[in-house]
Image (cartoon, rainbow, N blue to C red):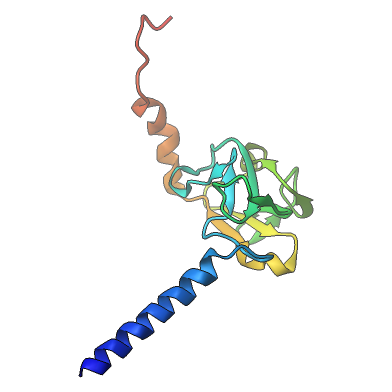
Length: 154
């Protein structure tokens, strides 16, 4: 029994170390769980909606680090399953960054925003963001819930 617990502990430690090593190594095809940055900071999906503004980029490595490198990507909308190739929404144009408001201006609630690495070897960094109808609440309630500025309002 004593040896069984020791072996279990050793296996758990080995698996932990292998997992840690795999995820902590930088490499040619290494992406964090969230490879998208908005204005140089990791994208917060909970506040991302159709009205979001800022420069979107796809990075390899830790998005919070200055060592993160930008990766070329395609960004486009899908409306009812059909690719929207209009303006900057294109499944053929490769970019290193894009002002996301230009693409979201073409979006309808329920559309999908696709961010796809240009190189096939980086395919695991592809992201699909559903622009849910619930986001309409942000448009209506956002200004009402914003903090009031102090002063006379002039």
